[in-house]
Image 1 (spheres, helix red, strand yellow):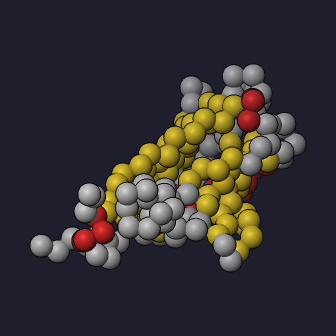
Image 2 (tube, rainbow, N blue to C red):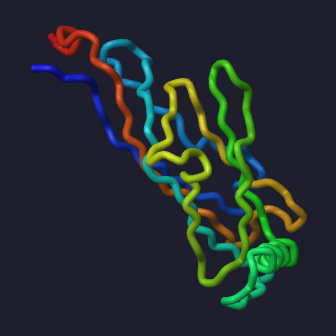
Image 3 (cartoon, rainbow, N blue to C red):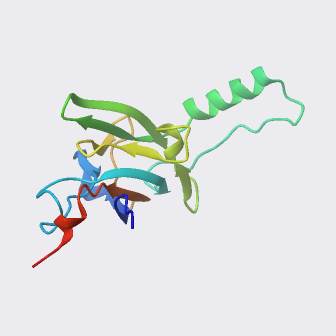
Length: 180
């Protein structure tokens, strides 16, 4: 009977709040196989299948958007969207990746607004155009609040990061799995 690997599901669950400050927080790295597995301290490969933010920020003024007429031109819509972005207070959450060959690299900033009661952003699409973001065993994903002129998270502000990943490790020889 052929078995191509060991699989497991993991959840990515983090809350950022006022206590987080500007700390660099590890969000995800594929897990380590347990000591009974093939190679001690070997890591899985990860496949992030979902990653989203729940944003609940009240320490800045509520978002005021410039509405667009249904017949507005693309240029007018773009101009109104830029004016909405520029004219509102915001905070920023930065995402970083690194591995053994590459130092910490900023991948993107996600700008966060006060929209009541709260709102969601799917961030997986910023990492890949595929349905999963493949993460090598030595790769780490970090997040950090970044100052963009309106302070960091304050008072009851919070960002919940929820995601899931499927992790896989190959089985090289079934005899290694026998525990005596």
